[in-house]
Image (cartoon, rainbow, N blue to C red; front, side):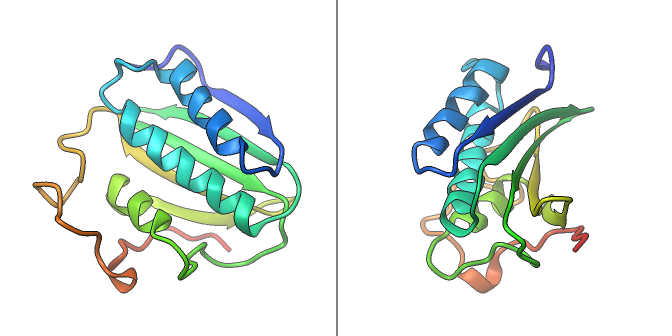
Length: 149
């Protein structure tokens, strides 16, 4: 089941943007899509991270790539490197949901953090089997396969 089209949305740098981003996922995929909850959670975490650590407006892109659903959040902060703050577990969740298919790259105005979620997930925690009793430690986060800094 593929979304009809790709989506691009501009969001203010405001805590309510995560809620708006989740609504965009609902409109793009629909609640009955098998990857809806996984994409919705990943979008929420990426937007929340950008709001918390970057300045200026954000761009949310939702793209279909064969059997993957790609989420991109572009911010306007001149930051290098991966968003791996010690304060939360958001990027651990993104790493788990994407099976390690995530990363970031510098862009014209800042950076873009992205992840790719299977369109038809085998289970809610790819590569882990049953849902874990607790999240892995920060050092155990699945690292991105690509990072174009």
